[in-house]
Length: 289
Image (tube, rainbow, N blue to C red):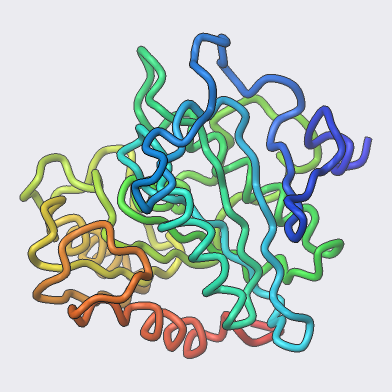
């Protein structure tokens, strides 16, 4: 069976410009059908807060052919593992990535937290599956399988860090060839990540974030006045240093939380420029990395 047929029950769909692909054939692992209808939980608020996600997908945002570098990034929006800030930390990020020649792969992972499970468990299954699908179909999509990263905001930052340190084994039974392909991101971008430490002001990483020398290099951004606590960024950066893995850490004095890419008076709003510089300097935007 080909990867294309195994990915979902229905053919890939599009939203006029972008291909939408179901992550799982049939029902996602452990789903019981007891979650309500998927919807924007705060229409008219200026941010799409997508809730009750039971059918996770990836949506491909392709750069213009003359800009395409062959790199790709799986994007994990935040939302406290309750909702997904789907435009602020999703579609808008894909458009920015396209502007620097990178394919954006927007991950719509399962929320809210499933009763009786760690909050990150179903989302981590979705992230691993997404990375495997992208890498298994890299040739078809014109993507370099050695230049596939992951980027996350807030809870999506925790998810991205978890995926960046949980890749030797799948957290679900293998389904098809996509699950035989590595789900290790080649690089990681964490923007105001949450839940990385054991408590708010601790520098001890949460037990599910097991950093090693094989952890992908990371670019990390956070503001000192972030109510989610800047220790998350410090702790992950320090853990990478101690493991002799690579990290670039940007801490800004002000900016708070949840700004995405939207402009403000705070210097932190320029993080996309710094991230693009890092991607370029590390060689992720150059074929043959």
